[in-house]
Amino acid sequence: MAWIFLVLAYGLLKGCREIAKKKALQKNTVIEVLIFYTLLSFVFVLPDAKNAVGIERAKLLPVAFKSFIIFVAWICSFVAIKKLPISLMGILDMSRVLFASLLGYAVLKEAATPTGIIGLVLVCLGLYALRFEKKFVGKEHREDEKPDKTWIFIVMVFVSCILNAVSGMMDKILMKDLTSSELQFWYMLFLVLYYLIYILVTRTKISIKSLFKNGWIWLLSLMFVVADRCLFIANGMPESKLTVMTLIKQTGCIVTILGGKIIFHEKNITYKLICAIIVIAGVVIAVL
Image (cartoon, rainbow, N blue to C red):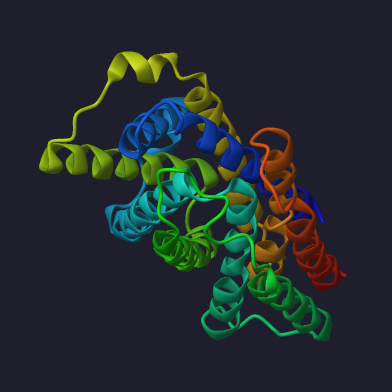
């Protein structure tokens, strides 16, 4: 049962991270936050270098592929989170449950239990209920953004969710042969390299001084490292299941919805909270 609490901790920290991302992006651009965020996170895991350098070279390729998937997923999600309400992002992000569950059943051959199926159905219903909320599209976006552009950012969220689901499946596979410190160190190193290459190729200008003053990025990096370590350890436990883990992660949506109301003063929170409660009910049933 320890893996359940580890994944729950990951989910709650993930919800807090979404709020920190939104706040960080108010002071810096998407690429600035991403490069400094990943670089700081890598610095935090540097002490694990002594335990990670002995990894077999053949195992580096799948880790590099996982990092590239997250590299693309983060660009999509960070662009979207800068434009969309944080409360809406929290619910849309739960769509990764659908993709991860399909991967868990199809690729990892996890057994589909009755409670798991019922839980997944409830998650789908909670997400589907969003389409009946008529006010969230085009009214809670930034004032400088046209309503007909909103769908683009919603699509980016779904792309990010699909890629994160693939990454989650790879975690489960990779942790059969790697330790949590090995995976986290190399995963973060490759991420830093990808963003550095992106900056060099696109010749993106970075305001280093403003980045160091952006305390939200420091907090974001710390929460990311702690949350990922919890998740990697959970993945390394043989009894953990990808499908159930993905459902538990979604508890963080409550944090983002409440954060949207309290911190960003967003509207239509009650309806979104109802949708989230339906999803959470599915999570509870799936875990039973």
